[in-house]
Every structure is written in C-alpha cells, then in structure tokens.
Amino acid sequence: MDYAFFPGCIAKNVYPGIEKATRIVFEKMNVGLHDYPYSCCPPPGVVACYDKDTWYALGARNLALSEPDNRDIMTICAGCYGTLHNVWHELQHNDAKRAYVNEHLGRIGMTYKGTSRPIHFVDLLDGMRDTITQNKEVDLDLRVAVHYGCHYLKPTTVTGENSESPMLLDEIVGLVGCKSIPFKDRLTCCGAGGGVMSGEPELSLKIMERKLKNIKKADVDCIVNICSFCHMNFDQSQKKLESFDIPVLHLNQLLGLAFGVKHKHLGLHMNLVSTRDLVKKVKGAKKGRDEE
Amino acid sequence: MDKTMDDIIREGNAYACIQCGRCTGSCPSGRECGLRTRKIIHMARVGIDVFKTEELWDCTTCFTCQERCPKEVKITDIIIELRNLAVKNSYYPSMADVPKIIIQNLYRTGNGQPLSPEVSKLRSIIGLDKEPNDIAKDKEALADFQKLLDGLPLMRWGGI
Ligand code: SF4
Ligand code: SF4
Image 1 (cartoon, rainbow over the protein chains, first blue to last red):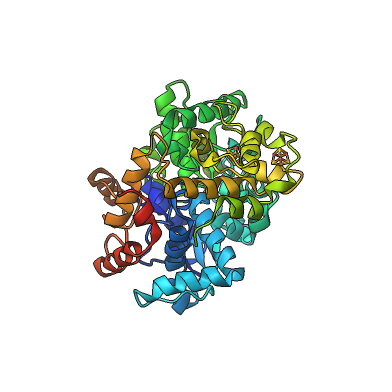
Image 2 (cartoon, rainbow over the protein chains, first blue to last red):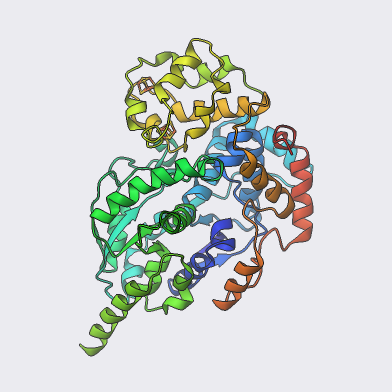
C-alpha cells in the first residue's frame, strides 16, 4: 500500500516526534509514505474563516499534487483532514467552485481533477487491525483518555462519522492493550480551532481547562489524540495552566511504544509535559513480557 | 464569488430556526464567554449586521451546534461565512494580530507554522531531515505557491 503523506505543519515544525512516529509505525506495517511539496493545509481557522475561496484554491493545490501518481493522501491531524476532506467533498459536487480553483491553478500550470482522496490515518488503521496486532510487541496496559478532534468527526454530512458516540479510536487503543476510560464531556472541543487559540488565547485556555479537569478525574496515564493541533493544545496548555501533568501522546506515538520502538525515537521526551513515568511504566510491561 | 447577508442566511437554512436554543446549550465556547449561538442566528435573520459583532470570533468551529440543530440550520457554516463577510468589510476581530502573522508566514514559507532553528535541531536529533521535505524546501514550488496566492482574495482582504 502506498500513500501520499501529508504531515501538516504542527507535526513537521512543532512536534516532529509525531512525524517520526508516523514514519516508523507505517513502515513497520508496510505502508509506503511519499513526500510532496505540500504547503500547510491551509488552516481552517485562519484561512477558511478569512476567505473561503482562497482556502479552496490552496487546498486543491495540495490535493492535486499526488494525482499524477494516483495516490490518496494520508493525514495525521484532524485540522488538515478537515480542510482537505471538506475541500475535496465540496469540489466533487460544486462545478462552479471547481472551475474557480482550476482557473487559479491554471496560472501556475496545475489542474485539479479530484482523483486523489484525502484519508485520515485512523480510518486507514480501521482496516489494518490484524497488522496492528501482528506488529504489537508490548501490551501497554495503560488507562487512556482518548480525544477524537472535532474536524475528524464533524460535520457528519461530510465525514460520514458518528459524532455522538464514536468507538473507533477506543477500539484501536484496545488492540494494543490500553483501556479507554470514559470521562465527562469526552467529545467536546479542545478549544484550539476556529482561530480561537491564536486570536483569543485566554478563551481557548478556559475551554481546555474545563476539559483537563474532567480528564484528571478519570485518573488516566495519558491522553491519546489523532490530531496534531489538539496535541499541541493539550501539551502547551498544561504548561500554561501549571496545575496538570497528564502526558499527551499522538496515537502513532502510542502505537510506536506498543511496537517496541524506543521512546526517544518517537520524540516523547520533546513534550512539555513529562512522559517519564509513562515510559517507565511501559518499560515495566515490556520487561514483564520478556521474563515470561 | 462574494456572498451577501441574504445568500448566507438562505444557504444556511437560517429561516428554519425555531429559536429552541439547543445550539447555545451545546456550545463549548459559550460556557466560557459571551457567545450566544442562538442569538447570532436570530440577529442574522432579522437583518442586523451580525458580522460586526465580536462574539462571532469566539466560535471554535467545532460543529457541535450544527450537528445537533433539530431544524438542520447550518450554523457553523453560517458563522464561517459571516466571518468572511466581516473580513471583507474590514471588521477584524480586536485581537487579529496573530492570525495576521499566520497568514504572513503562510505566504513567506508555505506554512502557517514555520520551522524554527530549535525544532530543526530536534528533528535531526530524532533522525528526521533537518528541514521537512515540503514546500519551504522546494523553492520552485514556493514561488508558484506565492504566485497562486498573489491572485487570490485572501491577499486582498487579509489585510497584509
Ligand atoms: S439549534 Fe437550530 S433551531 Fe434551535 S435555536 Fe439553534 S439554530 Fe435555531
Ligand atoms: S461551532 Fe461554534 S457556535 Fe457552534 S457549538 Fe461549536 S463553538 Fe459553539
């Protein structure tokens, strides 16, 4: 299997451990990831909220890059997925908009055909459950709080997901021995989207604080997300709020640990909230398994 | 393809709103600030220039209201369109400086969040290329991207 790989600017330029973990984990599962000269998605918060037509045109440029190679595009961030998938979806049935983006792309010698589909990596993992189990070296035995990310789930008219009781991520962490612990308002927004984190950081932090309080009550070992942007918000906000210390892992970093990859190769030591205790716990589980 | 207030209300199905308030009750942002989603829809419908209100920018675009609305009002879509209208009419949110920097970064490097020397170092520590294999590295692609962006409305409305 081969995909065009869309890492997104947070995984590339802020939390490179996420990019690295993704490359390692998918290589182990025999999925080829290919690079293209992508720009950022562009961000739904700032660009779509300022000018939607620009958002369509820049999104279409990214989508068109792997069309000559017939490759679908794998994203690892709900924000990138939200942009690319919404743009793709709109251009599938809005001919006027498609003509508009092609008129602009024509200025730089490109055409958008819509033949390469964006896919969120967790949907890809859904069809690879056996491969995940085969690659598992450690049963992690962790209590985790999962976070889906709004733009992976919604709007359901575009995503086709179940936005009120999704189970996919809970099931996937279960495959590597983790238990997804329920907590109050588990599906609410982390507060980062819509340009609120950049435009109104205090409001964003309040939304996050409420979320973290609920997670803290669930007494988990870590937060597991499928969105680099939420990941950044969870990690950075805890540092700002000073009253929380729940480690934050992108799902691909969690899978990396379960596949026996060293935590430093996954960039876990680069998080602001320390992952030391978590890593110790996983090492204990690994040792237990080796001695059996 | 500029939309008028009327286009936005009609396309977003705002006339179907029964003012039940489920949107406001579902809003994670409204719990912490003055955003009242139901009120935004109401104001839009009765012809008030709601794109001028600051609360419009408190929405995280989480789509919860839109999912839960019993009358299928495309609430979040409406909010995003109203923001577009606000930008075109120069009603920027009071704290729009950071978004502006993001747009400048996007133009300069192809990424809203550019690479810093610190992260470049972190990348090589964990065995990634110092610079991501993306548009910022590919100067030809970046020049084309800038040419593309030069002709798009964001550069006209984005205030940069
Ligand atoms: S949920 Fe829908 S019908 Fe109810 S007030 Fe909000 S927009 Fe109107
Ligand atoms: S989309 Fe905006 S208005 Fe609607 S619930 Fe989310 S934050 Fe509130």
